[in-house]
Image (tube, rainbow, N blue to C red; front, side):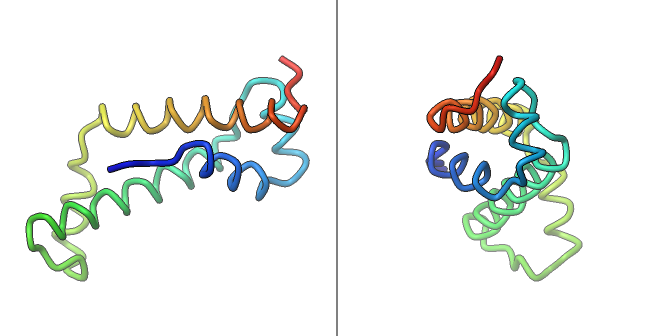
Length: 98
């Protein structure tokens, strides 16, 4: 799966209200945003897996099992990369303090 982290982070950062952008400026990512983006990643990765294994993504029970079985290293790599990209997005906009 190829992810354009820069574009994704720019979009997420621009959706954030000023209060959350201020949190990013100090070198932290609001948990609500990280959870939202991680859940979207898990759903997308699971849908790709369903397609590869010819599983109906509308089968909610199977989908939930596959989603929960995503390798932790994939999830942590995604979270690390999106975190760095969010900080870089804030820095490109001249908003990083830390």
